[in-house]
Image (cartoon, rainbow, N blue to C red; front, side, top):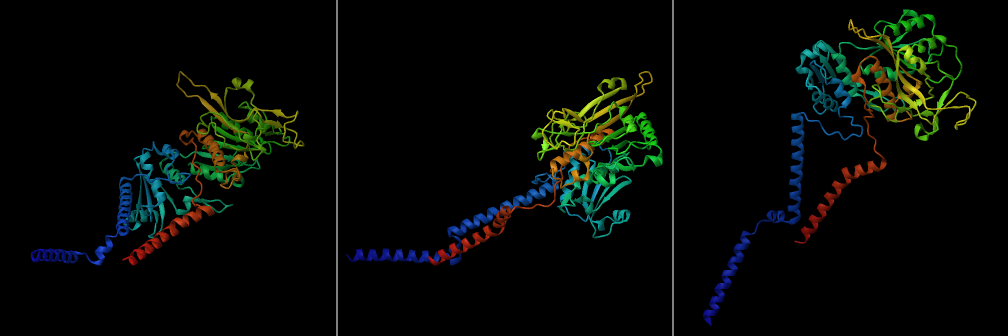
Length: 513
């Protein structure tokens, strides 16, 4: 019995010793805390977040090193080089350097500029510290601490300031980013051997370049054209360097000087863009008619085109028509679009029977729909078509190419032709229409711009400029009230809630000990 008790006593002592050893091996309070499940999970989360951040940092560094294009999440793809720009620069056979002075590598416009290299290896863009490039500072007079962009090709260069990369809507005061447009224009400018000259005839129309078409003037200049006005009475002729002559709705007849000058210009094989709005009163303009008849175009009638198909008009206004754009070289990227808007358009009457005799080839560019009508009685204010109205389809845009001289097969001399592109509207390229705040919307105004710019590009023989252009939109982003609330919750409320919950859980578990 004693032996049994002694055995049990030894066994108990052994167990007690183990307990003591176990207590001695128990970790301190800090070790005990970190083993708690919530903290372990939190640590895992922090590690995961750190890994994700590290991955994004590595991707960003890799994209910079490899010169990969950042992902553009903007709706209008404001920071992605357009196919239009790529096409324009892809055949340049000269080295072009674009220096971003005073900019950092994360400059959004620099990202755009670096994308040119993918279209053409000879175009290189980089950020430079002017303090490290005294040659550039001396050559272009750039002081330390200033910002600017230098586009350089050989001895030719163009310097852009920050203000050159934006424009402003004077009605909304919004900032419009035109960086790509300016960069592409500058590249073409320093690499072009010849800059086309476009002259706007003045003195015979109330619709003038400087008063009514400043936006168009800017757009043409950005497409690398030299834009001038022409007073033919002072020159006596159309300048020899005129690549395209632009005529807008003559409000009075040409005098003999202008008439003869224009006819000589046509016979020399040069081109005209004619935009003629609706005529609301009878005018005696025989000389204007004389010029148009060279191409087989009959005199414009008093009257206006109106629409009955609501899908072919804007804001249910019959005089704001959306013409059908036909397939042609000029409209190749606009074919079947519904974004061109004509205001108070008139029909173009072409003498089909005389075209062959005049050696004129006709190409239709834009048509009013079959449901449109031509009204000459302006006392009739009703929208519905009346018995006295002429029902469509009407030509509102056309190209007429006249052969001045046939090709000589024996001498291999090329044919000489003169092209006329004519539209039955001129307000569609007015400042009011092309303004970023146009009531008709950005897409429509972009197509209006494209139509006239493509027409001029075709007439000055710059086929690479015939395209659909990107609507630049605005640089600023304005969130709705609902979106603003969501953004504030994500940025501020969610992290705060997570912190509070973490503290509460920690306190509860601490008290349970």
